[in-house]
Image (cartoon, rainbow, N blue to C red; front, side):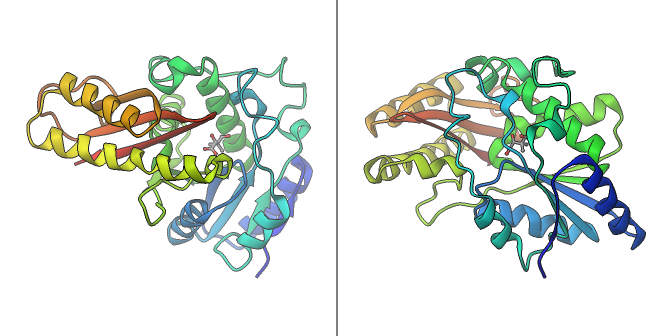
Length: 282
Ligand code: PAF
């Protein structure tokens, strides 16, 4: 079955009215397209949780800082629609920028989630999480889902969206879905498409180091020493780490010795490409 397509607010409202007429709950899977198996796993999870699934595909300009990869971010709409055929997806929302930001991005209402927006990825990408929170809130208002599914690969984003929903009382259940990995452990990401073959090989160090950090924490290691060794291992593999840290799983604060659940998190550059990944420590 091919999903329906809505490209503006009016088409979306009509399509949602039809979907809702059939009854049941609506789950939203927000994406920026260039869909891979990780996204399709989110759609499958949404299909388990709700009777109707909406996938949004929108490369959101407000979450990219000047000089970042907004212009060259992969856009593959035909392939994305083919990939969604035969999945649990009923409707694809593929808006132009005017449908999301009718007054333009400079004049757009924005939301800020204090604390979580300023650490880790937020420290090196100022404004990034304001853009994420703002576009997710817009998508929530336009689609009005009962459930929304986000990948744990963007763990900080997942926590930020949970906080946004809890603080504003949006009444949407936010579900995190486990990261889907390549055979060598590299987390699936649309940005993997940027990697040259040698960079792709080196990138496999990220999940290896994450797993090592998680095991070292479980074995009772000291946080500062584990983080320093994690950075050193990434550098030895030819990567430029931005951070390699252990954090509390619930709020990304600094954990007390041995505290769990925790999360190992890495952001590192492989050549020009910035990759992120994380590992659960239950
Ligand atoms: O994770 C992403 O692809 C994006 O940050 C999101 C949630 C679709 C918002 O643009």
